Amino acid sequence: MSEQPTGRSGLPGWVPLRHSLQLKLFIPVFVGLLFLIAFQTRVVLNATRQSYLQQNRNVLLLGSRTLRTALLEELSVGDHAKDELHSVFQEAFDNCGQPEGFGGAVLDLGGRAIYRAGILTQEERPTIPPPARLAERNEFKQFSGFMIEDDQWLASVLPVENQMSCRQCHEDDLDARGWILLGMPTSTIHATEGTIRLVGFVTATVLTLLFGGTVWLLVSLHVRRPLGEIAGSMARVMGGELSARYIPESRDEIGLLGERYNAMVGRLEETDQKLRDANVKLMQRAEKMVNVGEMASRLAHEIRNPLAGLEGVLSVLYEDLPPESPDREILEEARNQVHRIDRTVSDILSFARPSAPELAVCDIDDVLGPLIRFCQQSAVSGAHRLEYTPDDDVPSVSVDRDQIGQAILNIILNAVQAMETPGMIAISTQKTEWGEAEILVRDSGPGIPKVALPNIFEAFYTTRTKGTGLGLAVSLAILARHNGTLEVSETGPDGTTFRFVIPGAVHDEPGAYPDFSLQ
Image (cartoon, rainbow, N blue to C red; front, side, top):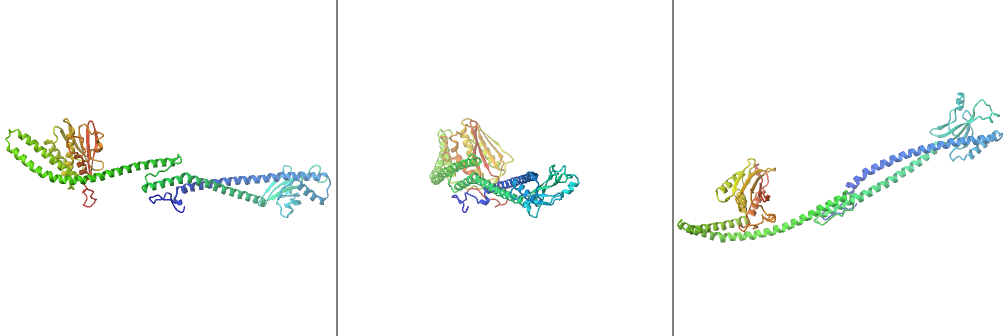
């Protein structure tokens, strides 16, 4: 490939061929196929060569026997002159229909050629053992012939028996009068074997290329192309086109991969839409916070100064009335309502314009201990029982004591307001598996309704007729400024548990770790 297709992200949908999975799969398959075809071709060639050699042996053996029979028939017809015997042998050789490249000869008992035909008319001929030595050992009676196989000749040698009709004219002291030789040069065999090897090599090459091309095409169609399409779709997704999908063309592993990829991209698209919606809400909330901040500043200025004067007047009137006056109770309630208005304004200011925490390393028990004792000794907890169970293994934390105390107090006040009958509020601390300080605030109230649970940390959201709905929002903001978290870990008919998590303090030298506190 001269140029790789790319997605919107600039990433290629295909990898270079030298690094591709297609080549990595093809090379071992092709090499294995090459060795298999080469081995099979060698076996077939060896078998073909042996078959061809044995076929030539059979042809020579059968031809020599036929030639001997034809010669004996020609000689038995009548008395031939010695100079006519060569033409008689040539005629017998021709009548046998020997293939081109064969040669025949009549040898005497010493192995010397008497008559020749075919290619044996040349001076060159096979060398055979001297038959006279076999005759001396009286081995002709059991001897029927032999094959000559050397670097130059392949030949069949048969004895010419001294038949009864022949003994009328020849001596009868021997069982044979000579030899019939029929042979062919091994160069002819080698040439044919070379042709067989060439055909085998061409066949092996064609089969290798054919099967190799088939493997390459299959890997390209069923592996490289679908994987490249998936990679191209991924590149489009990385470029921001979350609607990109891969259409599986098979039900194999790659098709399953494509289905899982489509499911993943679908989840990613849903998550992206949720993040966009959340971002819109955050922008709206940020705009609301700006407006609330400006409004809170003006309200604080416009309300607190008159409240301070009103509280002073109520205090003077309260002190001037005699102890038995019924108006003292009215003035006391008026003072409480003034204090309530002041707390509401303080909550609005804390939420809308939070102050930066003044961090100090301390034990979490130093923060919770005084707060719990204050709640137990005052009317904060009302008729409810307040229990505190500290853990000695909790790490030190770097916090603003007042702000963390305010966050926990807001949760306690919410728990008190949620329990209509006397109940229990249990506060405990422990160390998390990540070395953080964990604070659990449990109440025995009726729990938080499921429909309200997603919105309880929203500003001004409340399910009660009293309250501003800022307590949980303020507590969540305080924990965020301390790099901590606040969540509802459990809720139900038996009560609700709020979970605070605050990172442990860093005791290394200053500047060893970055400051992630929200200013």
